[in-house]
Picture 1: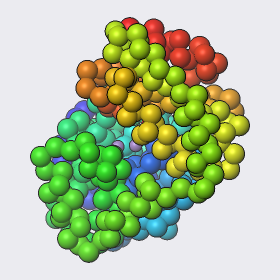
Picture 2: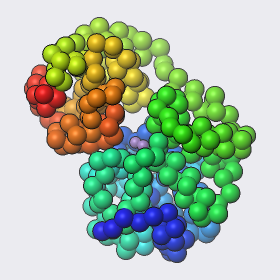
Picture 3: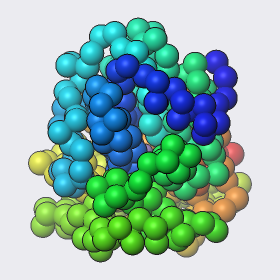
Length: 320
Ligand code: 5GP
Ligand code: MN
Ligand code: MN
């Protein structure tokens, strides 16, 4: 197990005879955009490549316009023995869900990621905690590799950049330079953002009404800096897509009275996944790590099997 830098990561990809790229469960546009961009490049180089994720069965609808989806295979059709297994945007092996066991069967494993909590679970680990998105790390790989970033690759990379930066709110020097390079290929940035972030069916509005209507503020939590949380029970989910569910935290987190925001999302099997966000003082990747998950300083998550009340109690306790 060791850290690798861009040239070594490129060399291992360039020399592979077959590659499987795994994205994280409940995939977002950063993991899928990174996976598809890498896969398109490998396909062009004549290297057999598959892309997959452990759950759910279908790609979220908002990502179906991304180039390279022909390289996606269902989780149960992932090749058993592969020369090189690459994970993208996964902070730990657990994020691969039911595909985590494939790590042991691969000749070589390369982890490409930007999570602060990354556990270095690959034999080779290319981790850039300073990167805005995993697609930004992949863009750097392409530069070292001499890959010409055309509109199809730019579309995939932009998808991860625009979503992981919260539509260019969480930016740093260089973020807009990369965005400009990608946009200059002729991609339609407005359309990509609208598809990924600003498109919801009408049923989203009554769901928001129920969920936000019972949001709760706990001013004394997090050492008096405040916690706000909302609970999305399966009963509210109906036939809404994951996109509608994932949008809720972005509204809840804007509450000025709370440093930390949480959304508890009930899965069909009754387990919960919890999204955490913070503004400036609290490192939620540490709190999520303590509760069995991980993430970034200001955006993290974990899964839990308790009742919603017990989950809130442990969260309040962990926040101190
Ligand atoms: P989200 O709230 O958008 O699902 O996740 C926010 C961040 O926390 C993401 O960067 C994601 O990788 C991380 N995260 C969410 N859920 C989990 C989890 O169950 N385990 C780990 N290790 N990280 C998670
Ligand atoms: Mn992700
Ligand atoms: Mn990411």
